Length: 628
Image (cartoon, rainbow, N blue to C red):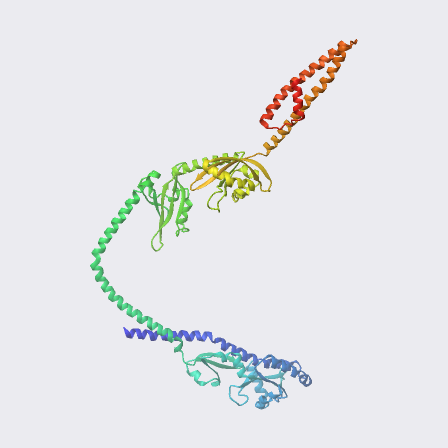
């Protein structure tokens, strides 16, 4: 078993190393691509020089324009040591001047025959060729890209003008390609079997190999971990071996435990059988309790078909057990969408509780209150829908009657012309609620200019004057608590701060532990104004009666003088004068009679309306009138 464990660890290690190498090869290909791109870019600059020469081979033009053109290439493309133009194989133009040393070691270019140069150029299809180890120094410093320039190349009489050359700084190309960033890895570049960058040992340490097409040659890039591939997978292999060792130990333990468990289960089988029988009896008793429950219980399968109804449910829907099975459960309830939501899986994690109607017969239903829930196991597997309910028909009837009674109460309450205000007593021990208004009718809202919501946010002192509130706090509150009924005249304050007199009749109400004052308030403004007008009218009547008494005296005195003169002096017309004097006296007597009647009315009004009398002129006139 230990051998198998160790062997499997070695196989796993080999597999991980292979995977790591493949991933490494994929991840580090970016460095080979970058190196190939950067080096070929510099090599292809020889083509730019080639195009510059072909534009016009006149020596004066080249002498004038070459420095600027070469300076542009030199500055825009880091990694170039120098650029040359070699007409006839001789270095005539060089930039910068210090770069001539690179060409001095390529002086054999003018010794190559034109035919060989043409053959090589045709073989490379116009691409530059590369001269390595140009300086004769270490092999990884510089290379030179060379491109021959032919005149009249399309004709048979083509002429070799010379060569254009680009000296390339390889260390700068390595830096641009990111080789210096590869810490922990050794990097080497090989060309035609010779290592031109890095160490030969890199190719001996099982590296990742990348082939790169550089100019007319194929170079090889090798990348290898300095410490080999095993450190990359060592931790995972160690973890694998630790896990497999633990699993092996656990397997041995489980085998032993399984054998022990077999013995233990065999010994305890009879005990478990007894427990199972006990559980069956408990389930039987539970089923009996559900079956005999007063509340209807309904259970459906996952397709919504009834699989169980207890006796109360069968009685409610007037079914037997055989006819109940298979009935579509949503069709039994007015809230069928609730059951269907459970069947569609939209509400299986929650239960629903509320009111619904049971369709027991055509056009007949029973009000129910209960709940629907999903029937699931401990793994949340869905098996059906469970519903249990209580018949609330009598309760709904009582609620409807109560609602109707409450509606009538509010209709009567709001139709009363007087203002009705219910507030917590101002003597309430809790100052937060003292005098708080808890109910008002429509008349109170209309007369005070508030909405009902605004009034219910106020207290009693907000709608009555300060004097009236002080009077209520000091006197009427104690009297109300003592007698249960009190009436008084108060001053009401509207929302716009205007006031009006009112008569308030207050009754004490006790609801729970709190005492309330129910006030029936009547606006006295119209009555006060009518009373004022009556008082003014009565005073005017008093004045008119007094004036009438005085007027009688003023008429009778001249009339008596006329009668006396007519009686003493017998004139021809004395009889007519006396006759007319009698007529006037009768009219005055009638006025006296009406005055007496008015006097009685005046005395009644004085007695019950309390009009004050002016005892000077009026009483004197009254006294004279009585004497006559």
